[in-house]
Image (tube, rainbow, N blue to C red; front, side, top):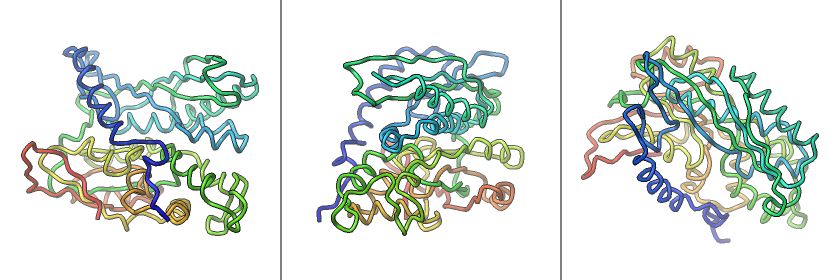
Length: 349
């Protein structure tokens, strides 16, 4: 059986990275002196004076929506997107203020739209954020029947002298991880291809969202629709107890693709893959899709939900502070890395 890859499911990460580089070049031409971050970090930062910075981040739920539609569950993807956005600005130590959503569709009923917004409302209550508006666009002929899209933009704030960008990360720092609980909001194109297009139950019947899998201890749909955790609550606890040098929310691109966004040049982050909890849905996707280990780490978080980098002497205190979140030490930062262009490096071992 040929090994499946993320690109064979329709998602080309390398092409997306090239597009982001071009976007960054174009966007930079619009910057003024108040823009504090480069394109590629988890949020954009704008200095509004008086030691206050606004942080903004936009994202979507991706093709997890197609699983939700299969299952007929519309009130959880809104929680997913709010938690995702709040986690992204938490990377820079910002607290959410408000969020705007976008729902695009051709024929959703008012009840289904209300259920989506119910999820958004619940997510906002979880992260202490106001849902102040958005756009619901009905576009027949553009969106296929019964299909919808959901995106959101969050705005948060942080004191300028408290903002975290990763620039303080140094050799010897420890990498603390908060565990994932599943796919979160990334890797669903590959997961759907494996579970709904390739895999067969009893080698005959296609798997369905309501197919119960013994190895999972639940149905396919329950495993895939597990809500994206809110890690910003952990950040609020930890920042009062230790010096946080950097953070990374593990989304599309996995550990390497996200941790590298905040690592300074000429150091390397080492993450040990066997420190993360084994999550059954990942093991099932890998087995049924005959997917290489490296490819799994490119497409999925593989158990690493959120990474926090702290001085090594404060690692034990960080773990203790996050006892309610099952935090664990995932790796460390090492120095002595020299390359021609001082590139940022992450290695999974």
